[in-house]
Length: 441
Image (cartoon, rainbow, N blue to C red):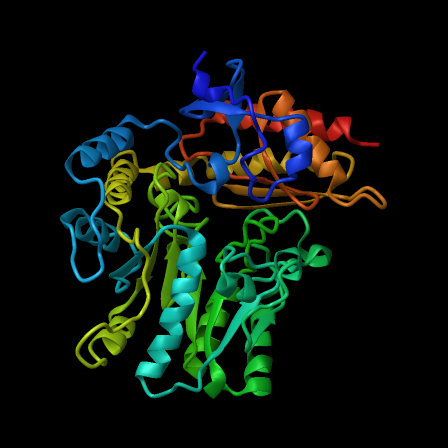
């Protein structure tokens, strides 16, 4: 057995978003991965029902991406992008600009979705300042929104547990209500029919604060990390219209919905609404090397860059922006996505995915099933006095049975690699159904 896959001391690594004490008492180790599967230290097969963390859209261990990274490492391991450049970063940006929504062809590279969120918010503020509207400093997020863990993304995000431990959030932030409505929309197949009027809450915030104080609204086309919340039909278009009416920038966080997950290159395309700014990460490199990006249109880029005096126009960036290895991974991933038509593949299997997920309706404690693209959320009723316990135990049962799922609260979230086949979907449903039944009490 490979010794590097068999750690003998778990103390040093402070694990992110983890119950460290519980994990280290009973660790679950993933030692390698290939295609649709992870493998444990003892070579037990684990079907990946989550694409890692929403990110390995092309599956694991893709030779084309691995070899691109290896080639690039042998040529140029690192070069700074502050006041100089290296060719592959420009190539990656141009390649990405080919698939972003029309007109959104200026790309700022980051290293994660969290950095992309904070970058997008900074760009929005800089844009209004460049246009002489420096009073537009208020940022609007949405309840149950997730935009990473930077202070900007956490402030605009709407997850209480992310915010309470740290206290200090950005000032001048407000939130729209979330769109989950179990009373009217439970067990919706695809976009819920009811709730577009929730977008009108932005008009109330405009009336409260004044449009002249609001810089941007940031939302996920489909909220993922808080339990899969597809937007009601017409909601995003309504939000777009209100933003246009008041000169407010609309930011889409496409970290989860980008790169084929919705059956199109980006959720904006599938859902028929184009934002002003778009954040990306995860599927951009198939998670082989950390990378994120922010795309904007000419109007925003030109206002900031061409409207500034000589010198640095935007005082923002990261040491690893456009890292050579990440750029190589991104190009290889986008080439693979196009060659195998991963968005089309996802769209083709989507009806089977939807029917299969909704076949779990009727199991004890299943109170809702939601889906959009190749994403699904299955909400369980919590145990009295023990929130999250039922879902955590379902997660453990699934892992022991050879399936990786994700839980958030008492919601099971599924987002398999886009190379998933019907046999994989069947196994996911069977294993998950058995685990839910076992936790019926």
